[in-house]
Image (cartoon, rainbow, N blue to C red):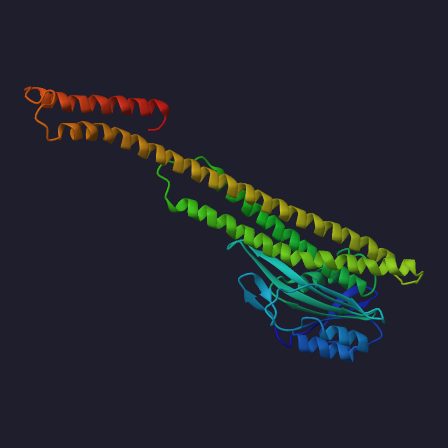
Length: 352
């Protein structure tokens, strides 16, 4: 994806894609999607971003991300963190993780999105396979309703797409948790494979890990939204006439509330997995107790003939029935009757 660029401009009919990147800075509104961090920095310098904005952009994680067992990490080995900065000229620099769900493997994949927004230009760069920028462009250019005006419409489309992706991930994880619940709490089947319990336990821990990854990706966006809302509140407090901030505050609040609901649902799924884990461990403990009772019952039945044989195996001369012709059959019959009575008693008590 390195070097790939897509450009969009706004005219009287709305946003539309253009074949070439427009000149920046230009007279109209423009949105450029770049393919790497170097292109983003270069376009920001040529697009009129202030020195303070460029300095803040240098602090943002513009390095290529790599995969780890816990998700996307930067070159320092840290997970992607959300950043929201605002320069004195009003430019907004935003970096947030992206998230998507692969249903076939029940895997949550994360990426990162960096956006630089001025009053005339938006520059965006996405890493990962969430496709947030492509969906946001489809929303803008397809005539779908997008709140706000100017370049803030691009920001609205991006954030709305981000929370929609997070909602899709939450739905997919919820379906996976529901399927796993049926597997874990179903009645035990005689002759079940011994590795069935290990499979269920691994599936529970696997889903908990994916839910934690989704919440880790959603957390930075949830924390970034209040910072974006604070701009409108500060402007009203200082009586600064900033166009469109009232509308921005309204849709940002709705996006934040929706993001909070997604996080609450993920927390509920995680709690359900904890409950399933407890039920699963309890069921394993019950089955182990049943096995121990069976072992104890058979051990008790084996003890009776062993005791009789041990007594009559003592090397003494004067013992009852040693010289009786029917002593041996009687001893065998006594062993069989005693074992039969014990077996009947254990069956009635449920031990066998």
